[in-house]
Image (tube, rainbow, N blue to C red; front, side):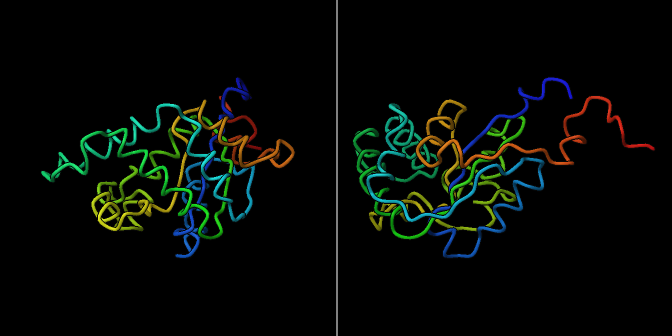
Length: 203
């Protein structure tokens, strides 16, 4: 199989407390399995607030990205902005996220495969469930929105966290998993997905 190592990108997925409580863990796993990704790490934990804060502090630009995304969503809907400064607003969100993430069990997973980060993000849907497309996990299984979350002064309940880039994935995986907890093995289906000539199908 040519360039096998280049086809083994890894990404982190966390089924958040709301996804676990709504019995969506199996559905989440099924979606990623069916597209051809391989599950190489899996565990259920109740995160501490410190662990959750560490997770949300990995990206130094998280506040500007998150705040800007929220402000743009408000503008697109013709709603008044939730504050004056998107960074200040996002930092307020960051203070709420550890409470949400540590409120109950989560299922953390490492998925592996060609373009794993982008594929998982596509299947998961956009951060705000209200604007996630039908067919995505967030678009199909939850109805929350930035507006509803802000009105209630809480984090958005959007079922899943997924890494935003390869660099972010590597850093996040190191928080949630020891190296020995990530398995290396082959799936029969990988021969169909990655093998150049599909050698060996015919007898």
